[in-house]
Structures are given as structure tokens and as C-alpha cells.
Amino acid sequence: SAATKFPRSPAFSRITSEDIYHFKEILGEKNVIQDEDRLSTANSDWMKKYRGSSQLLLAPGSTEEVSQILHYCDSRYLAVVPQGGNTGLVGGSVPVYDEVIVNMNRMDKIVSFDQISGILVCEAGCILENVGAFLANEGFIMPLDLGAKGSCQIGGNVSTNAGGLRFLRYGSLHGNILGLEVVLANGSVLDMLGTLRKDNTGYDLKHLFIGSEGTLGIVTKVSVLTPPQLASTNLALLACRDYFSCQKLLFEARRALGEIISAFEFMDCHSMEMVLKYLEGVRNPFSSSMYDFYVLIETTGSDEASDKSKLEAFLGRSMENGIIDDGVIAQDMSQTMSFWRMREGITEALVKAGAVYKYDLSIPVDKLYDIVEEMRSRLGHSAKVLGYGHLGDSNLHLNISTATYDEDIFAKIEPFVYEWTAKNKGSISAEHGLGLMKADKIYYSKTPEAVNLMASIKRLLDPKGILNPYKVLPPSLILPN
Ligand code: FAD
Ligand code: MLT
Ligand code: ZN
Image 1 (cartoon, protein in one colour):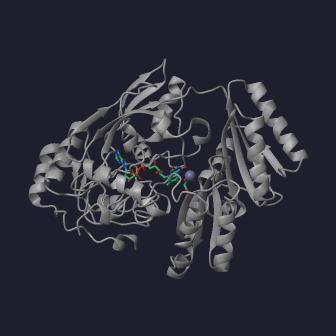
Image 2: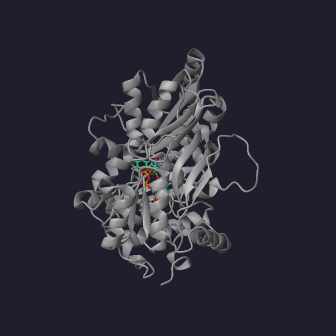
Image 3: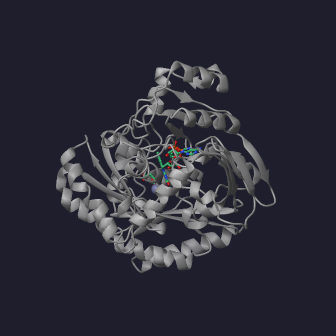
């Protein structure tokens, strides 16, 4: 398993009964959790692929409590894993060994919302969907959306720099997060909770924490710029005969629907077959036949009539010139939800199908599907190879599915997939992060000089290396053996 590739660092202490006593002083009895069932859940990731052996979960209720926890852990050389909704897909959110789990569930308050600017300040443990519901009442939306919205937390989203389904329209969290409050490894609280669009006073430190996967600090509060909810949304599900048509469709959609396009997602027929087979209530939208590729185009705009007719005209033209072979526009809320379910449900269907080897790649769009085809011919009939993802952002999710985990298949996938990606100037993590899975793979996408600078920053902010050890960077750069 992945855990065995890095040994437990002897620098870290083991938890004693005195430590437990101290944590109870800080948090109160009931927020110091040693219960076996709860620990079993928290030790295991969403895919059930990574498993730690932590004996202790702490549930702080305030920034001050997070600060006291870290101050104590740092002084005692106790390693810590920050944990949000535990929906991460790279083994970053669970302990590798006996690290203390600091779970953010209780920090779920909205702090403030400004109706004029759309700027929201909330605690890191707020669940994305709940924040969305709060904002809907105010006439705003979150600038990010993802399939895990019912469980993932805004603090986890920030810490992974999550991309998701609205990235095409609203861009990265590096643009939408206006400020952060972070607790550093030694317990000091760094207040960078700005609510300004523009602020060029020195180095913009919050960016270090966005995407640092809990290795530089624990995010406790977030300030985010939220866009207004617009009057009309349309969703079209389209069928293409080949990947080249999907690419042409993207090129044309960017021009014809430029100011209203809000998502452009794709999935191949293997992904569609997977959701049809494993998810309840999902039916083939084009009942007559299966196509090789499916594309979801969402538009969001302010003029219902003109948005709709623009989309219809675009689909009509795309049909006529053969870019798409079929297509439907969702007619109501329930159809809209069922179209999204097909795309967002692939991850869940894959887990139901058995073992999944998951890769999250940025690849220039013209070559993006080549790796899927090459992988398919490498593996033959031994595995199912699926390609889906955020085509509008050049982000491919390459997934290989087998009934049970198989070392021989794994050896045919890695390092091939990373080498191919590096050779084609891609990234081995577009949006999921490196976590435990790819901590020793960073050199495929970053130069040694860049990695060394990252390690220096890590050592500066967390000299003892207690925060999320064995993740993101090769442990040999950070921890004494
Ligand atoms: P966790 O899984 O708990 O943690 C993730 C990482 O962040 C860990 O390294 C953890 O230590 C750290 N962390 C968590 N909270 C904090 C905090 N407060 N302070 C410091 N560090 C912290 N990802 C995408 O980018 N795009 C997608 O479209 C997408 N879709 C998904 C769909 C499904 C069905 C699933 C299961 C996952 C999906 N993901 C996606 C991956 C995952 O949901 C995201 O990475 C999400 O941002 C993780 O949030 P979380 O609260 O669950 O964090
Ligand atoms: C998605 O886009 O569906 C998510 O990133 C999850 C996945 O890659 O399976
Ligand atoms: Zn994704």
C-alpha cells in the first residue's frame, strides 16, 4: 500500500495519557474522540484506498482552540492531519500512521455576508452545499461547485485549491479567495482575512496556503468573493462521434456562447456505461443508442429568452455541420439534475465497480484524449479505461477500473502515465493535489529548484514537520529519518 513507501518518522512522539488529559482541558471531554467507530471512519479515505491508524481525533470549535492544539502538538512533536469533509482523492486527508486528526466539522458558522459586494466570510468547516444554500437565499452563488459538495468543506476546498465544474466561468480559488485566517504549526494565528478585491501590499501570503493541502497551516476562516445568481441557466447534453468533435465543439462554443457559457464537461462512453450500470435511477438519455462521447454545456446569463435562443441556434448549427450527432436541452429541474448526476456520479460509480486507479491530469486539449487511448491499448482487456473531466479547462480524469486491485496492472500504468504527462508538458495534478499518492512524484511537474524552494518554505513555517507529514513533498526533504 502507499503508506508503506515512507517509513514513520522517529522524530514524532507517541500520544500519552497526559496528552489526552491536556487536550480535554483545551476542548472539553466530548471533543476529544477516541471512539473506535469514529476513528475507523476518520482513518479511512472516501475511496477506501488509504488507511491510517490514528488513535485520536480532536474537534476544535474555534480558532483559539486550533491554536492551542497546534501549539501543544508542536511542543510535543506530535504529528497532525488536518481533516475537512474527507472527500479528498489523493490520500491527503487521512493519517498515514498515528497522526492526531484535527477535524474541522464543528467550525461551521457563517461569519458575515456583504449584500453589496457579495463578499462572504465563513469558518473553514462550513460544508460547500450549505454555504451554497445560504447564498441562494441572498441571491448569490459560490464560485465553485463539485460532486462532493454535500460533504466537502470550504477549508478543504481552499487547502486543495479545488477546481470543479464552475472553474471555466469563475476561475481558480486563487482569484476568488480574498482572505484567509490560518493557524501556523506553532499555534500562532495569521490574520489575512482581508475583504478587498485589490491589495498589493507586499507578498500575497494567502496564496501559499491555497492548495498547500494542510502542510503549511490549518485554515480556520475564509473570505470569498461570490458572484450574483443570474436569472437563467440552461443545460444541454450532447453526443459526439469522436474526440476531435468534442474539441471542435469547445472551440465553437467559446465563440458562439462566449459570455454565457458556464461549464463544458465531457465523458466517454465507458464513463457513461459505468454510471448506467452502477447508479440507481440513471437512464440513457438517448434511449435509441450509445455514442462515443458526451458533452455537457451549461449556460448562465441574465436574459432567459435570448440565452435560450442563442443556445438552441448553436446546437442547431452544430447538428447541421456534424459536430454533434444528438443533443437535448434539459426541460426542467429534474432533468437538469439527472444530467448533472451522470457526470458527477462517475466517481461514485467507479468506487462501486471495484478498484480504481485515479489520475487527474492537465494536458493540452489537442492531446488530451491520446493518453486514454494509449492506456487502453497498453492494458487490453485486463481493465476498463475511462476518460472524463473538465474539458473546458484542459483537465482530464483518467481512471482505470478493475474488479480487484492488481499489481501487474499497476506496473503497466505507473510510471508510464507520469512520464507521458511530463513529456507532453502537462501536470500530474490538475486539481486534486498530490497528497500521499503523489508526494514522491512532484518532480514530474516541477523543477528541482522549485521543489527545493517549496521545502524551504515548509521548513520555515513548520520547522518540526508536524503538519500533514508524508504528503505533498518527498518526506526525505522535510523529515529526519
Ligand atoms: P479533505 O478531503 O478533508 O482534505 C483534503 C486536503 O486538505 C487534506 O490534505 C487535508 O489535510 C487538507 N485540509 C482539509 N481541511 C483543511 C483545513 N481547514 N486547513 C488546512 N488543511 C485542510 N476536487 C476537485 O478539485 N474538483 C472536483 O470536481 C472534485 N469532485 C469530486 C467529486 C467527488 C464525488 C469526490 C469524492 C471528490 C471530488 N473532488 C474534487 C476532490 C475533493 O472533493 C476536493 O479535493 C475537496 O476540495 C476536498 O475537501 P474536503 O473538505 O473533503 O477536504
Ligand atoms: C470530477 O471531476 O468528477 C472529480 O474531480 C472527481 C473525479 O475525478 O473522479
Ligand atoms: Zn474534477
